[in-house]
Amino acid sequence: LSWALRPACDRWQPACDSEARLRQRDSAMNRKLLISAISNLSTAYNLVIINVSHVTIAYQYCGGADACSAQVEAASTAVLVGAILGQLTFGYIGDCVGRSAALRLTMALSLFGATISAAAVPLGGDSSSVLTFLALSRFVLGVGVGGVYPLSATIATECVHRPHPAASSCRLHRAEAEAAAESRKPRTRALSDPSRYDPRQDHTHTAVDAQAHTTALRHAAVETTRLFAERTRTSAGRSSSNAERGRNASLVFSMQGVANLAAPLVSWALLAVFGVPATGSGGADPGLAWRLALALGALPGLLLVPCMGEGRGGQGGGARHTADERMSAPIAALRAEAGRPAGPSSTLLSTLRQRKYWSKLLGTAGGWFLFDITSSGSRAVQAAAGDAPPLQGDLAHNLCAQMAVVAAIGLPGYYVSVWLMDRVGRRRIQLQGFACMAAAFAALGLAYDSLESAGAGGRVAMLLLYGLTFFFSNFGPNSTTFILPSETFPPEVRTTLNGFSAAMGKLGATLGSSAFKPMKDGISAAWGPAAGLRWTMLACAAVSLAGFALTYGFVEDRRGIAMEGAATAREEDNNGGASAAPIEGGLGAAFLTVPANATAEARVRREAA
Image (cartoon, helix red, strand yellow):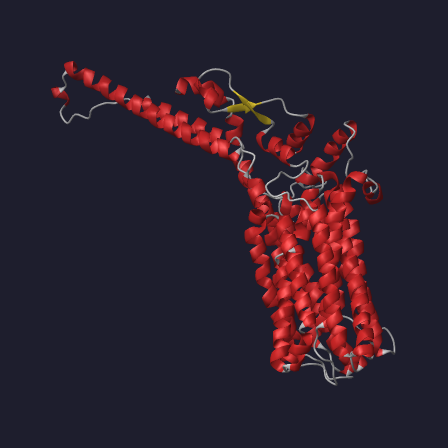
């Protein structure tokens, strides 16, 4: 057996030498996933923390929330506009220069925007102009955090731990070599007295050698069968890369839920330590609580600086590039020769003009758009404004406490999504999420009068019921809309169309925030406060039903399916272009595969790597 397999195993020796590269690749993937997760944490924190800071600043510099509502609305809109620009821009940049390089640039913008926001001061004699300063700095921050969405989602779905196809063959080579070496070891009998040696007993040595040789070959055959079974499992269509893709992306996105809970708790703690600025105090109060809360948005990015600098090797004094950057240019040239669109040469508008993407964009961008409209309904349930900032007191009058309770109810939804994303599938999770959100919004709107008349207990029950909308949004479209664009589109336009889908989500958030509050105020003025909130919740239920219909018609379940244009390239890149061509003849035909002719694109990938 050893003699028969040795020529074939010798051909797999390069695979044995690549085990170190395999471990290095897994380490790089873990680092990229960590960077993506912390980037999402930073993005969500910066988007949520401003909800508390705006209230504090409005009371400190304007004397109340209604005194400078236009400036507050402008500052809120600025970050959304910046996010839309960042999603559209950095999605395209990610396809041009590589995901990692683009992510580093977005984090730099986020660091700058968060730091400058903490230093906001009035621009002139008008104290309310501090919100103008804040709008400008938050726009820069929005560009940075907006770019994180498509890049982190794409990195999370593309970074999968897949066993090297040649790893089992490598271990097979070693097992056979060890078995052969063991069988050739001399079997000598240790004699305490050499003078008692009898040459007629030499046949016992021969029998021992034969028995040892047979045992070694038997163990080798068992090990070979086991390795072949493992080789078959890891090279099957249902590979670990496809099985863990949804889990990786869901884990990365779940950091948003951590940030949603951390932001109000951090603000609450800082306000307790440094105090709530006095109403109308202006610059006389330094406002350390809200300044530190905004500055902490730069902390995750600062912690990532050492990690983002690792793994960028260089040759001499030349430019240093990551693997995906080195691959992009030659692969794009090959695709251009083959008539396939290349990422850097395809603009966003030219990509959107291709009809083959339209139905998919209805599912990814349309679902994200409708979901973010419903998420803006949170503006309808808020702490009652009075002469003092709604940041202290009981649950009914404390904005930080309300945000923390809602975030705590919604947080488990992220981890239920992590558990079931690859078991149930993206499409089913998004369908049930929209359906349950519609039911919760409808129940909240229809039962509002009864809950409001029940006093403080009714308001708590209303808040808990509203928190369920967040749970089913996180265990639903909030998680799936993050993943679907990354695995729906081909690699050359993946981050571009991912960024477009995310931008449509932020456009929905802008539309919802600008439409729901005026609608609620108008209805409340005509038919009373209860009617305003009731119809706002029912409108959110109707939008959720529209999202259910759009998901049912245009979202496909790609659970366990290789990402378009990525699986073959990754397979060829990992095993050097090996295919499942069996060895002709001999016992090795049952256990091994040999490298076949690689495609031009795979050769370029190997040379770049």
